[in-house]
Length: 156
Image (cartoon, rainbow, N blue to C red; front, side):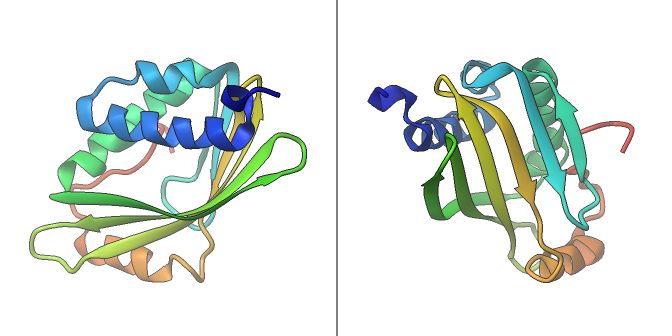
């Protein structure tokens, strides 16, 4: 296995590409890091839980969520708390996305991410929002989320 195809390296490269896509509204780097038949799932008691299939649909879903949420807050910060390679070309990571919105306290959305890679590209990725760990974030969203729409799909 080459360094470029190592699942851990490829996952971290995907995270970097996502952050660049968010910053510059250019998602080609994200698309290049997804397998054509990529599957993305969001699980948990969040209003944006969904399942998306196909790399182009996943990128469109990311764009929708970012436009409805991340770009409507004043500040966003992503922190990788841990990341590890698992058997079967899988990676698991603990991420915290922090947000600031005018007139509201800061909030963090903790999420566990598991990805399966093939050939250095993400084939499957699941964001798992545990109810107990993200209850404060859900309360923040209920109190301060007017006008914010983090959903990935229109029909959710």
